[in-house]
Length: 403
Ligand code: CA
Image (cartoon, rainbow, N blue to C red; front, side, top):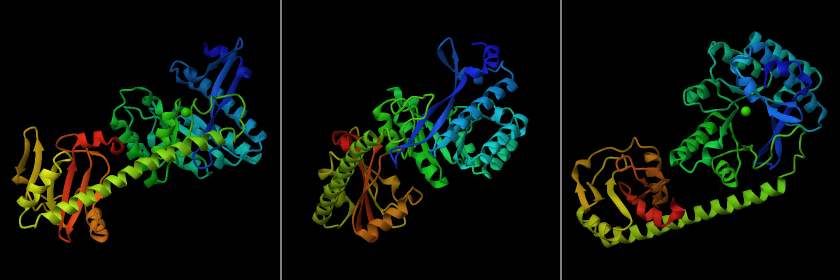
């Protein structure tokens, strides 16, 4: 596709709109505007045109601006109130200090378009300009109510730095990577952390490239409020009926909710099972010495645990580690007096156990020494002694609702 062909045939440059759905209303809340070019009855994406380094910026800007005008005209004609997601590279955004772009938006505002509906999807790929000037411009746009979304996770871009600097309104997460079966659990963990981060900074998560049901489920599980992808709706030249998928989405989410509840039920019943079991063992042992207590625990929890120890309420380890290696249970005395209060949730959990007089089954995490996926059951023996039992992966694997 030749750039000049496009530039001399601008009437065949048209915006396409890909619907974005929301989890809270199950309906379309916005559209991402995508560039298309029609030639000989064929539709081509303008993606490669915008990414081509050989094409001068003013050409790209002209096409971008035209798409903007055509898209906003269409939005103005529609009676619905929805977000308009506009893709902009940092370079094109900074074109002529960002003035022509803003002026165009302001012209539409005069005609009745609320600029709070505009979401700028910034791509900073290959941006060589001054990052401070860019941020300054974005903050200025924001004073008009324009929202900022950050899209890609480039391996070479400092994604987390940028999230911290820009505090975007929306984080767009590409689920394309989930298509590969080799996607490790680390990706899940990163997304989970991202969902916590988004919550902390008040950003909304939008998952894009959802092409299968399990990707929608994944997005829902990981705090996604907005969804976009072929599984839901393809880009088209017209807006769609906003309630089109309402029933289908409601049904899907109902399944996700049932599944989530089932997992929580098994989590709590396992937690209760450990509670009863450990309580019995502690009552049986007369608490004369840790050796005697752990003797019983090793017998009763042999197929369940791989590490056990007791800490005081400040996190100082009172007992040795009782650790099950390849050759069975052994004692690691060097752990006595180590302090674990620095661990996430440690003090919170001590207080929780003390207040509720009940044990806690932790979330899944990787053991720092063995690298294996584990959960910890912690139990208040009395107000100053807390028993910690790390659950063996095999046990979790056999009770796969726990994984
Ligand atoms: Ca985009």
